[in-house]
Image 1 (cartoon, one colour):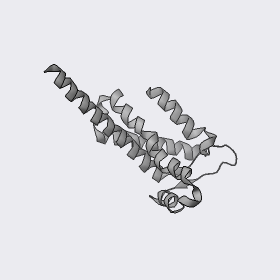
Image 2: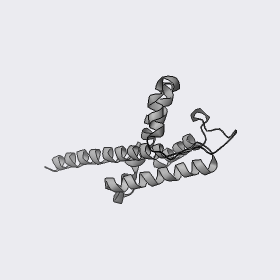
Image 3: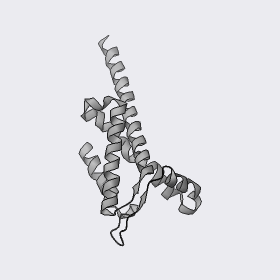
Image 4: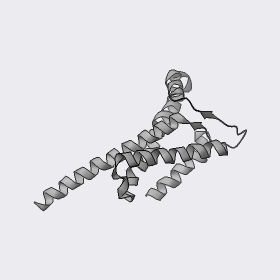
Length: 142
């Protein structure tokens, strides 16, 4: 499942035309000011449209929730929220750097923040579900 998730994420981040990943007139686009794009999307939500705002703000979070969930499943060392946040940030930084260098998409520090938040939410969901599973198993043993 993790492999399928990575393939789908790669497609949407680098190749999906529906998310503006075209190869025509490629130029460097980047944002190094934290909250600049988030603020812009909120401020101009009526002009940009609900779809664009949801895709940018919530899509960046939602895209990394599975990453944060699967990571502790695959690597027990990542069952620490701090490790998962670190690896989510690293993975997001890699994606943003590839987008900058390949001129597909844009390097955006706001995306780094939103992706990392998504990874943290995924890890918290895993930890919560794991706790439920453990308490259920403890009740079963009694």
